[in-house]
Length: 214
Image (cartoon, rainbow, N blue to C red):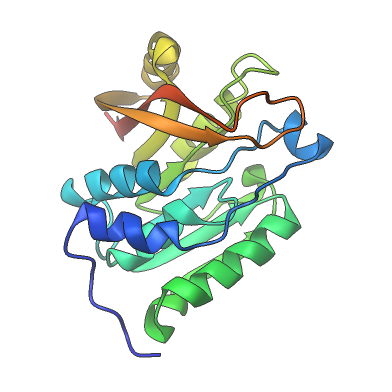
């Protein structure tokens, strides 16, 4: 497959991502980790914003807790030099690899590095981390580990968090020599993923936090 042209708009990027596979049903293991699929609209909005800030094209990017890979694949499609896809769930990594093959041309796919590993075991230096960490519904501030690890390996981090946790994110950033430069309000579409969910879909008000080393 020849190298594809960069998507010319955020909406075109969202269309490409919407055709990729996501996990429709999660089990107990995923529940404990608070794993949810990142919807294509939110992924496109987030990575387009990062792209417009100069943090994607020709950059080395890591997608922490990548799941089926929408954030990292969006980065590949917008010209990232290399993207690490990191997730401890081996099934997620397999699905991620299939999505990369589906969405990216051969040249871009060669820039994807898939790692079935805990993010704590990732030590390569990158320019940008993108991540949709646990929201802390089951374990308070479960996103802390993701933030701390991202701060170790990158100077710029894009991370999804509930808006009401903004003070927590700002404090942990400041404590580690980082500043929150932007908070982009988003709505995350959560599909009925677990058996106890009563509605087919609900919207969660979140923010995409851009965090930069001070």
